[in-house]
Length: 328
Picture 1 (tube, rainbow, N blue to C red):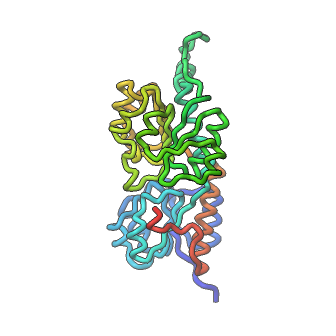
Picture 2 (cartoon, helix red, strand yellow):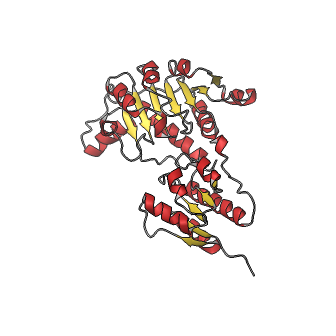
């Protein structure tokens, strides 16, 4: 007799093709709508599932895992970041955690580059004037932005996405600088003409554009704190497509409002959907609804990785994208 199919609970609506494939392979429970699950709903889902498929919007902490019972064996995260999951507590309880790394590298780098251009060339301001019907025609001094060619880009976190951004920025003529936990190999630095800064303080004080591309961990929380933000040149721009918690958002708002920072392009926010109202109102800020990875292709590939992780686990093997607590 064939082995019984795994019970899989998915916490948010996924692309139709992904959901259809899951129904073919597993006993899957899908959401009737796209509403987020509450803490109690998540715990209840974990008590009746062999595999939980959460997203970044689902916070899963040690207390919730302690209430989950003994059935849950795998958390197959739909997304690369796992800072919303207490991976160490999960592993202590015998629950594996997998993710979907590398899928949205190019999409997120595209968005980071778009934000750099959007802020420096004042694209949203121009769009707002056109949509309001108030445009009176071309003027030599209207909407003057800055040329990005020749500007120094400081990338915080030179992993897959940081390197993909460096490749794009170099093509635009930007000078590539970076700060990372470990220095890259010489041949990779040579590919981008990149300059490594061991001191983050020294780098941020000299850059024209700062891009945040590192994950959120205890060591990167408020990495760009009030002290470091004060070091930025007054004509510098900050872009963040990684995690909002890396920047002290209140300090960023103060710097932008005071003219100590020229502009910001943000796709993520420190408090999730509770975006500081001033960020929406400041003319030198571009805010987006966490859409850096929002491509049809990227979302489908994320689903494929989730399915492969679950299927491999169901076949008695280690999921290919297993998350190791010490590496988070």
